[in-house]
Image 1 (cartoon, helix red, strand yellow):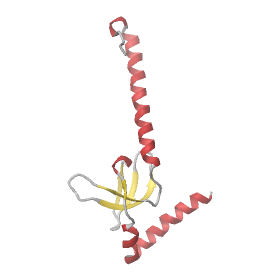
Image 2: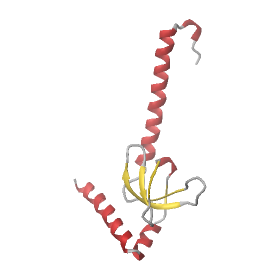
Image 3: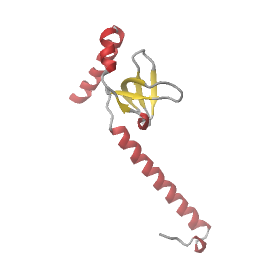
Image 4: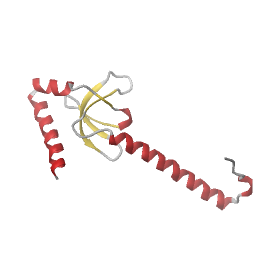
Length: 118
């Protein structure tokens, strides 16, 4: 596909520019939505921040652009869904040993069930 840009005046070039930018934004939004739809609150996930070992935790919230993940040690991370992958159920196993994590997981699972009944 070729477009002869030399035949367009400034107004037409600006209009074309705006249409291109809007199309790119739309494509990114679709890609982001697809990656976000792969996860639910309560899912065990893992991600790897720069310069650190992999971190495993549970999703506690799906935000507009990020996913909130709580790790077994209680740290909260907001991570883009494209950086997440599914994890084994290690946080649940560790929660059995730590009562404060058991309470947090019960709260998260209760919220998930409450939304499913509505």
